[in-house]
Amino acid sequence: MNSYFRLLRPRQWVKNLLIFVPVLAAHRIPSAGELNQFLFAFAAISFCASTVYVINDLFDVESDKQHPVKQNRPIAAGEVSIKSAWSIALTTLVVAFSFSALINQTFSAWLAGYFAVTLMYTFWLKKIVLVDCFTLAALYTLRILAGAAVVGVQVSFWLLACSGFLFLSLAFAKRYGEIAVNISQGREYSIGRGYKNSDSNLILSFGVGSGLIATLVLALYVNSASIVALYRTPIVIWGTVPILLLWIFRIWLKTHRGEIADDPLLYATKDPVSIAAGLLVAALVVIGAEGWIV
Image 1 (cartoon, rainbow, N blue to C red):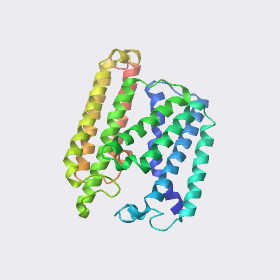
Image 2: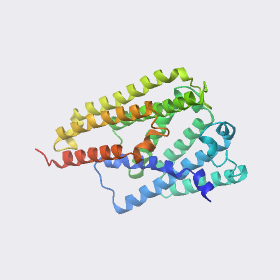
Image 3: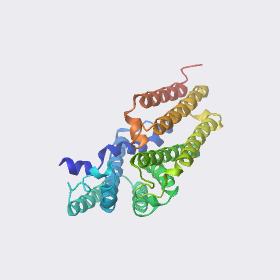
Image 4: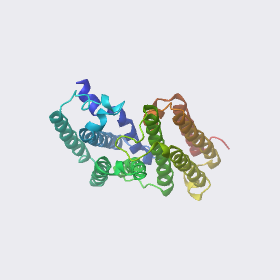
């Protein structure tokens, strides 16, 4: 049972909390009924993601067997049969869209789009240099758009731009970390990817640059007229800019040192400094919105 559980990669589900971002960014507290809708949405997108994880493991089983870490995945390790894996994938897909049917058609459409893009990524896009990172960033952004559809919240340009560049930076960080593993293992190419070890410095530049753009977008938002409608003391929100910049630099520093071997976003959910930074940003947003500092 543990093997079947690991096959679904439930630790990846924490990423799906992004569906709550639009309603929080709009400073709207969901009602009890809306909260139930969000829970259904979280379950739907989580089971949908697990479906693609299983399908990905089925088609990457041979390359996973050659990877120093991925060889321990249930299918590659021979803990789960091919037939059982396909049955699980079909079951989780049905469960995902059953939950989405309890929400609304718009959310179901976004979920279908998310599923389609993830399949394209699994079979094709992840093998194309640079396009794979842009696709990963788009999948994170699709979670936000799907969350907005749950209660009909409008997603602002600022949120899409800032999150898009931030997720692109994290996607490049993930690839940079994988290249570092290749170098340590004496391989020239990334298994299942099109990157060479010589690309590492360029990937580093792309990733840090994307993070800087995300911070710039946040700074421009704080200085825009849009912020006046949401915050009584907008100047307090300026504090979020250096926090984001410091966090991005820290993630890249740790990735460069080889201290982040997994997805940077997953690392952040367990990193005390990242959690503290998130709580501080939340506190500044509340203070700015309520006008507690004059």
